[in-house]
Image (cartoon, rainbow, N blue to C red; front, top):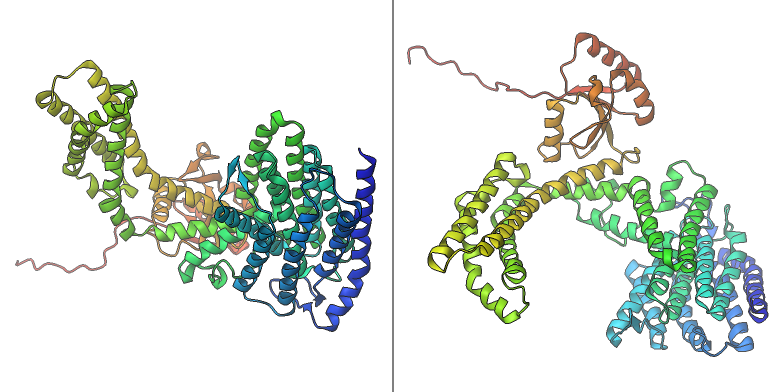
Length: 636
């Protein structure tokens, strides 16, 4: 390692650390004197009023180190971060600091904050720093400005939103700086690493006062500044790198804050679309409305202390950084590492982190699958989709099989002369066969048999018409028609099964979303895995049953040992009545719903257990109930 680089790194870290360390107590006294404090409430996790505005100390410590670097040490030729970068970054970051201080003193409306952040990002772009190129393509000025502003806004707000617990945003800022610095070092840009070292020094000093129990908070002035620094450095050092290094590495380095803001946008957008009576805790004000569902809130609700929750998120962030740096060292393994990381993240997201979002999304989609929308799909959407499928399939068959030479003119002429026949006749048979009068969300095997029969009949009829009136029927033509019919049949059936699949998947996601009991309104275990159980679950999925959105089916118990571990309508059979006490210790059900004909002995055992555990027992039955019986007059 170059001695000059090592000396500069130590010097910049020391300046950033010392200036921030010495100024933080001063800032703390001033903010308390002027009443810039963060009072505890239902969203915040601290218990005492704590001064905020600590971002001032971090801001001054970082820029003091930058002044030493760019005004005293200078930068070598070819460096990506030069004094020009700093002179463009300084006024933009100062605007952001003032915006953050204003919000710390007097909470600003969300759109005012977003407007101020946009101004700061635009100032940085005007100074000559933007994306400029993307994957080798030169971007127009307007597109470059838009992408640059969006990039900066996303990362800036990611750190702003994650700053809800002692030391969390500061610690993640240190890890992100180390990750991006390591990436730049591997890519051969050591001079740029010194700027990140300065940021790390300022954050380490502030973490001394900010870690639990914190005596001062970053405030919006500090959290937005951290995100702004990392966003602009990633932007200014990425244009000359490969796509994976310039895009993937910064995203993984700030992965935890980015993930948290993605969940927030997802969660708040879905709740905005929910009917008022289905919104959690009445929350439905939109993307800008604050809530207590951030990652640190969820970890705290699961019993972690603030230190444990912060350390866990530090560990996740460090793991992402490690994967990113490993992909740079062993580039031949980069794709495999990213794929495995993506698969692991998906598992963690679905199983542990995005539970609230999955539940709200499931409720939103299920509440939207009402009868009028299904009628609209059957009357309008399905015919349009079928015509597109028929036309597209015939275009592919005409181009690939009938005219394999690739002549566009020949394909166009052949397609235009025959498309009306091969689309019109099968579609006419589908109409005659009453395909569009069937409710495909509740289709049975016979419905799909009728669909297949109408398509095959229509295809054969079209072939007959062509043979009689347009020319002879060759073996090559028959092969093309068979391929066409097979493709159309698979796709049309697949489209009709898609909506049912989406509905069933949503139900499964909703169950996953609250399988851990987090915020679940009512947890139910079903007793009996037979036909009555299947019909109940199917009716529940179809939205026939009222009042079922507030329940979570945890699983099924059945006394048939052959069913253990299997699934009935996406619900797993967990065991038998004998296993219920052990299962209840883990799942803690609120209700047992009986869907089986129980013997007196089993019913008594269930009732005794439920009485002891204070669990509700209910029963769901099928059958005819006479609501009015008027006797006939025998004389008539």
